[in-house]
Length: 269
Image (cartoon, rainbow, N blue to C red; front, side):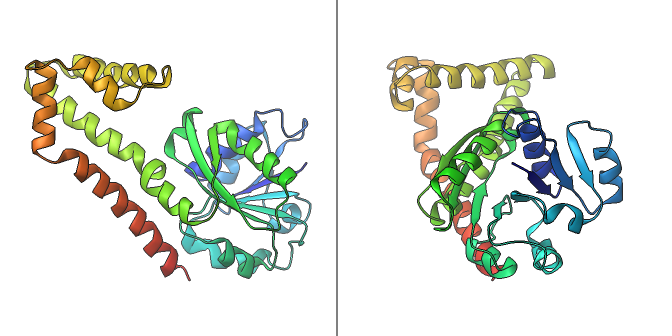
C-alpha cells in the first residue's frame, strides 16, 4: 500500500508522522509532498518519508492520497492533479469545510473520505471523525481507520452533517478546554499562586478529572455530585455557574462553531 500526503502543514505533518511510524505501510516509506521549498528541505532530513518535489512523480503511483492543504488552495491543487489521478485511487481529505461532492467534482473520481481532525493528534491523543462516499469499500474504510488511528482514535459517522457537528465538538473543542483552563489559571494567580504552581494546580486537576471519567462508567453529573457536598465549597462554585447559565453558553458556543462550519462549507461551493 502506497500512501501519499499532499501538504505538510500542522495537520498534514502530524498525520504523516503518525502513519509513517506505524506498521500499516508494510515497511514502505510514506510519500509526502509540499509546495514549499523550505518545508521540502526540512522533510528530506526525516528518514520516515520519501519526499517528492513534483506532484506527477508521486500522485500517479499512490494508492491512498491524503490531502491536507488549506481549503482555499484546493482548486489550484485539483487543477494540477486531476489529469494524474485514477478512479481506483482513494482520496482522504483533512481539509475543513470541503465536501465529498466538491472533491469528487474537482478530481473526477469517486472514492473520497472526508475527515475532521483535531489538535491533540499532535501528541497521539487526537480524535478524527470520518465519513465516506458510497464508492469506498468496507475494506478500504478499515484501512483508512487504521491510518487515522495512528494519531489517536477515530469514529466513523454516517453522513457529512456529522463532520460539521464534530467541528463544533472535537475540532474546535480543545480551544474550549484551553479557555476554561486559562480562566482557572488567572483565578489561581489572582489568589496569589505563582505561575508555575498555578499551572500545576490547573493542568493536573484537568488531567485527573479526565482520567477519572475515562476509567469509569459514571457520568460527569454523577462525578460532580461526588465532589460537591450540600452547602460546601464546590457546590458554591457550581451554583455560581448555574446562575450565570454557563452550561447553556457552552452548548451555544458549540453550535456556533457547527453553524460556522456549515457556512464555510457553503462558501466553498
